[in-house]
Length: 198
Ligand SMILES: [Zn+2]
Image 1 (tube, rainbow, N blue to C red):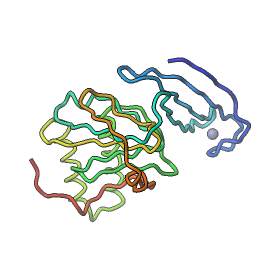
Image 2 (cartoon, helix red, strand yellow; image 1 turned 90 degrees about the vertical axis):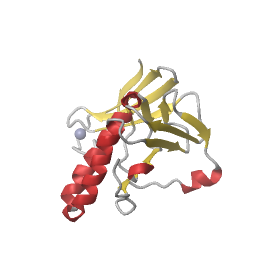
Image 3 (cartoon, helix red, strand yellow; image 1 turned 45 degrees about the horizontal axis):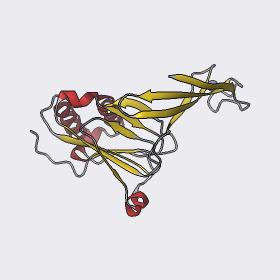
């Protein structure tokens, strides 16, 4: 990790309004992958932060796809920039770029945890969907323990996202696929849920 820059930003913090915003750029070397640049704006008063990642070696629209088959697969690195869309079709879960989307560098397990956090929020907001939500959470549990196979797909029109694993395949996205990438928020499609559990 190489710290390239750290400097104050002459703008009040969007959250607390204090002039304590800083900008930081760090070069990260991802094992078996290459270099990327992580940029972060953060507030020293209230803890607000917003980061993004930029790949330094690839720039084309890319799709990464990896089967999640056993517990070992949970350790695969996932780099998701603010322009990346993550889909796990088997549970109808999708994380799209949106106004509040954050870049993150995590692993497959971290992605599953994010979906569980979202489901827990949904449980409060939609108590009438309780059964469907619990069903998705059960499936995530099965995936986590290698009892249900799933696929993680990561699309990025700027090629700034990646799944780092020998099992991941990578291909260029077609123009149509790029056009169809939506920006929005996090969706978990409860309607298309299949009732069959493994
Ligand atoms: Zn602040």
